[in-house]
Length: 525
Ligand SMILES: NC(=O)C1=CN([C@@H]2O[C@H](COP(=O)(O)OP(=O)(O)OC[C@H]3O[C@@H](n4cnc5c(N)ncnc54)[C@H](O)[C@@H]3O)[C@@H](O)[C@H]2O)C=CC1
Ligand SMILES: O=C(O)C(=O)COP(=O)(O)O
Image (cartoon, rainbow, N blue to C red; front, side):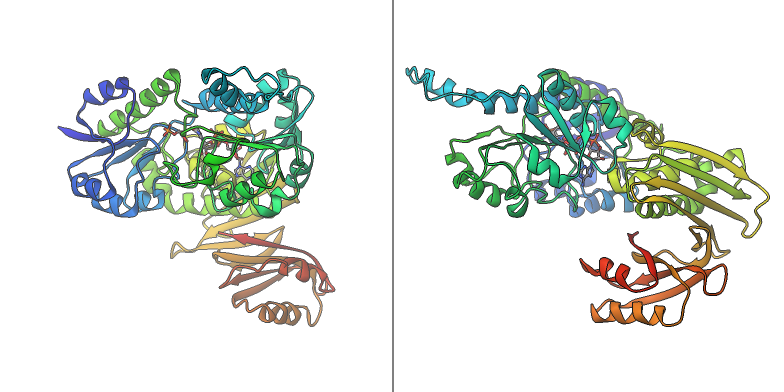
């Protein structure tokens, strides 16, 4: 019989479901070393946010087929390590949406009316009516950072409280924001105009310390910040300084850079409310996430696909085998075109060409969407949810098939319209299976994708390539390969460079100042 380790406390209904197919051991509070010791016995691991699934744990889990996160954020799991080892990672994308949103709203109202302190005061036999004068949220600006599932619900409810919602989410279309009654703004404006700011973004390298010394300095002195997303999105030290100096008015925190919260000056501040990561802790949400994830673990142990796998495509093994190299091609092209189009895409045209112009190649469209959304959703987007996520974000996906294109055995052409305009790419596979970008904005090129790339649209004229090379050199950026594509001599042209190093901040704007350069884009693949 299969064995499942449940390493954080979950609702008993989850254990019941797992027990249908496996021996279930609930062992909470284990150290990493203790988990490493016992994990080789287990076929599945189910957890919440307290267990940190490190690379070492994943690698020790030689029998593990699936890791189930009874919640949303998988930032406590080394997902790349699990993927490399072929372990499916699943979560419950919607099970605790309402709970987390309601907690953020409760935190906002508690903060504005001093409820925790007033409660303590009455319980200490005091009656301090003048000490606890609050602020209304009615007609105030609420800045919502991250307009996904939780952020959207917060926005909806806050609107009914009479608040005006300013939202920042580079991956949400204006139409979707309009539907929710939110004004999409850039972060600068959100920070400058908000009376309350609530964070609902995943923890990624982009969101790490999104709120820090510099950003806090741009906010109103009366602003109150609520964080029910992840610790580390706020630089805690900078926040403490801003609260101590009165630079901002207050904060309500459910999540911390280190959990459980250790020694911290946060505990001493009167303008702060703290809860111990309770966003998902409602009876309803805990039943929801436990059922959602336990069912998926049960299914995978029975050899069935998982519905919310964050890392493994939910394709049948034979389709997967046939399309595997092209899935990677479509995903890479989707990722590339989303970065050229600048996020917030409202349309994606997918043209499957040559041999790929068949019905069976439908998963390639999904793979292209997955690539397109990967900047926004990281490992949360998968083959199962990519199309739904695109629809919810107001992205129109148009598929065409053109069997007559015969330049490679099969190629994929993508065109996306986003905040930086309309851009297109074509990609194909060489007979060796290597990926080639064969066309950029209708200019023919032939370059392999690489980690750091620079593309320019420029006028074909003598000296321009040298100038770009010299400029990159002066910033110590090494060029691995370079290619120019043009249609006519001295007309418009594109340049595609693979770089060994990321482009330093500020260099892109220097490149666009070079005479003859019309536009320049950096891409990370
Ligand atoms: N305190 C708690 O107990 C809970 C915390 N959470 C946290 O809340 C987060 C959000 O959850 P959901 O709304 O369900 O996820 P979601 O994926 O539906 O929404 C996240 C949104 O953030 C946006 N986003 C990504 N990068 C961004 C960036 N750099 N700037 C602005 N927006 C960006 C995405 O486009 C997306 O719309 C989770 O990742 C998790 O970490 C979730 C549940 C409970
Ligand atoms: O679902 C999430 O992302 C959460 O943060 C909830 O965490 P928890 O399962 O309550 O430890």
